[in-house]
Amino acid sequence: MNTLIIGSGPAGYTAAIYAARADLKPIIYTGLEPGGQLTTTTDVDNFPGYPKGIDGPTMMHELKEQAERFGTEVRIDFISKVEFSSERGGVHKVFSQDGTKIEAKTIIICTGASAKYLGLPSEQKLIGGGVSACAVCDGFFYKNQEVAVVGGGDTAVEEATYLAKICSKVTMIVRKDHLRASKALQHRINKYHNISVLFNHEVKEVIGEDVVQGIKITNNLTEELSEINITGLFLAIGHIPNTEIFKGQIKMDNNGYIITESKSTITNVPGVFAAGDVQDKEYRQAITAAGTGCMAALDAERYLQEI
Image (cartoon, rainbow, N blue to C red):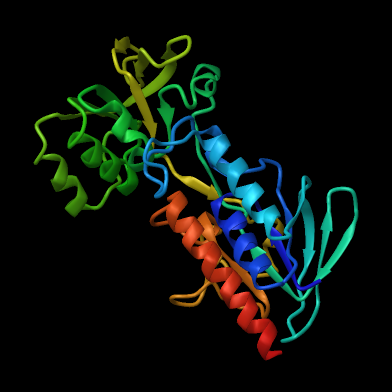
């Protein structure tokens, strides 16, 4: 086969649309979470073309239908092992969960990244109901409301300052006695009167049945418990790229993100391309993932024309 796409978020489905229209006859393996992270998002308001917004699962279903309309074969399964060829024009081998071997001239990796969560049952229950791992994606829904951000690194400070422009109050919950963010970013906090930082604190429980109503926090020095009334809880403690099965087969950075050539989706393995959050640790948006999915399909098409 010409093109195999691993992963089914905005990057995967967009790659499939472009690859199918180029007559590459792509097959897409959806992975364990068909549709990716957006399937856990209730409302998507910032993707162009949806003036009234759309919920994440519906959007992913429509992208799937669009890919299938052009001839993409969608398989609800996941890839458990890969054997990439190092030769230009070589055939790559991958294996699905049930042991099926698939051979392809080009592979587009769109396995995404998973946000780190605290692991609290109350937190998991309210993902999409006030618990979020993306302020840029969901902050708008908490305009003029009080929210909290968990984390002390660069991402946490960036999320907090972004939210401070929208929300009435932002409380940062920091486990240590200092921020890990760069000094330049730390100075940003001082510009916002509505950001407060609670050092040496951790979230113990998220309060609410269907939506977030508050959090229970503890001072990890004194063990004193307290509550904060908020409507949104934003986790900014990092992401994990879903690249475990590719380790040793493809070049990655120290955090496990696949490295691609500048302004392209080309990896160090001939015929293997990467798109979306699996290679993007800066933007992590549905629209940017879709954009790189388009790029990957075009890169794959050019590669096939040249070999």
